[in-house]
Amino acid sequence: MKIELNPAAVKFAQRLLEEGKFKNDEGQWSEHNPSADVENKFLDKHEIAEYGQWHLGLDMSKGEDTKGRYHFPYGDFKTVHRDGLIAAKERAAQQGYSDIAKAADELLQELEKQAAE
Image 1 (cartoon, rainbow, N blue to C red):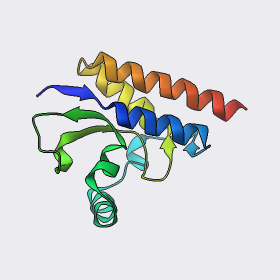
Image 2 (image 1 turned 135 degrees about the horizontal axis):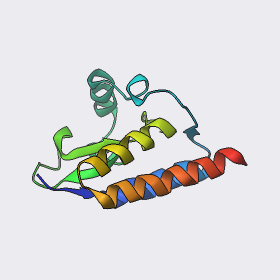
Image 3 (image 1 turned 90 degrees about the vertical axis):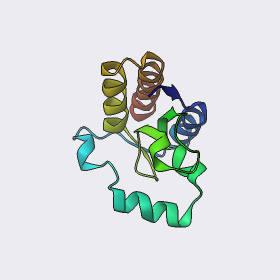
Image 4 (image 1 turned 180 degrees about the vertical axis):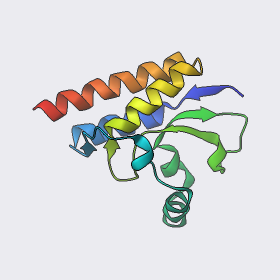
């Protein structure tokens, strides 16, 4: 399995940050990461492409219309979460996806900059 950076997700996250749609939380991502039930409810009302915008990684070996294609979530379908970006950055680095880890780190720096303003 080769996971690639999802450029659409990076642009979407940048736009959310510019709009102030983020949470500068310091908890555990497991406390905020949407459950499978929440994901399915989101997909009942939105296209899979919208779901994909909330994930920094793409597994191109999986079908475009499957949840399994998308990896490294960073938000709750409403806002970008600081702890989501940290989790994505750490997991991507551990798994050797340096481009995804770098993108998550850059988004994290932007979030912290926006939060300080």
